[in-house]
Image (cartoon, rainbow over all chains, first blue to last red; front, side, top):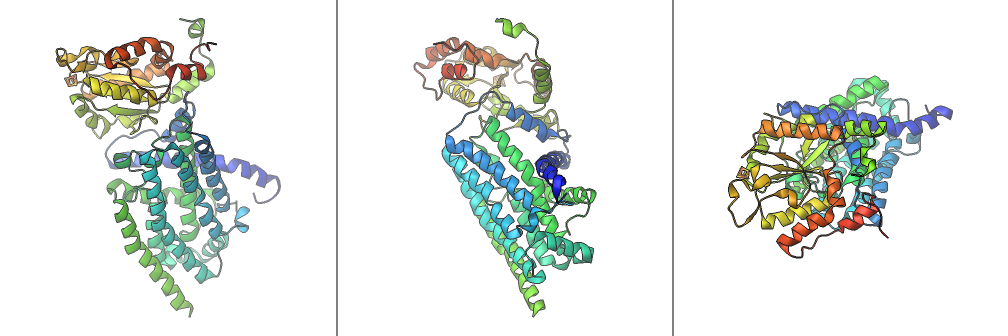
Length: 303
Length: 195
Ligand code: SF4
């Protein structure tokens, strides 16, 4: 799938595959949360129904040009990032862009959202955006720190190379076992990146009425949902490629996705929400020093 | 009733309706005492989410506007503003006898007696107050109506806006709303375009 016709077919099909995976993961998430709370929960493909419902709404309020463009930026930015993250059998683009590129592109969707929400001029939305950027200062720095650690250890910044190295060495060389300090720090960062509790300060329905989504209705909200569903497997895959040795087959890939997401969800289901400053303070108190310590240990071993 | 409404739905519309009925988001505007029955409806005991019904927090995102109880003149004004912010198709559900005929506040000087003079009500849940079982069965009949393509009361607001507007002005005087419903109705093609 990395040359010729196969490549073209895969480039076209990949967003749909990713969306489908996202729907399954999202539905699984809602079901699992419901089961933890002793409820029956919705069906497994509930996110699909939600998206269909939103995209077939008959009136859609636009707040202006930027509001429309921002939705394109949101989904477009996510799709672009997605291609640079290697999955089993598809690593064509990851030879042109390492994880520095991925980190950079990951910032496009939040910025697009900020532009769009800015035009809706809703105070709750603006608070949501400022919180989103604050949270970036929390988890992104931790993530970048773990990336630096890996780059120093293996002398490469390519996600695909890193994945191959881990696969060749077996589970003992998986990032999470070889560098547990970095692994734990990145687990916290993943929780923040996926915007799950206790770091769910951006959406916070009871405080700021779903923040950035406050003024979004109909197709606009539908686009945000699609973006979220595509980004969900992608963000899990980034973690998987760095710390769980990626995956060699699609079966392994899907199993690892679900196991990883279960871990995130059970934490999400039992915790309350930090306050914004609390979340930031937590990130700078625990995961960031852990990651820094991990990097220092890598440097010490290398000397 | 125009001929258009009498014709059969296309196959696509039937399929779409059966998918759309699986996801309904509800904005509960807790005006009265009845709201206390909603937490058990949403949480473990009765679990509304198994029908795909979820509470949502802003009118833009919601499909159902649930009005739980008596409406004073002040709150009714807010309800109308909220309703006009929602995206069609949208369903107003009147909850409890207070929204039907004033209930036990019938003699009150401060409450409105009948919600359907001001907004097109899709469904009433009778009772003072309706138990979670009644709420769930009410939502199920709403789901059935959506499936059969009968839940079209929201169109009435676009088609007969003068009627609702007249009642609103009778109560509030000149009330300022954010969008022109008549323009919207023409823009989205819910009524014939007048030149
Ligand atoms: S119907 Fe009964 S429970 Fe509901 S608001 Fe009126 S008095 Fe309260």
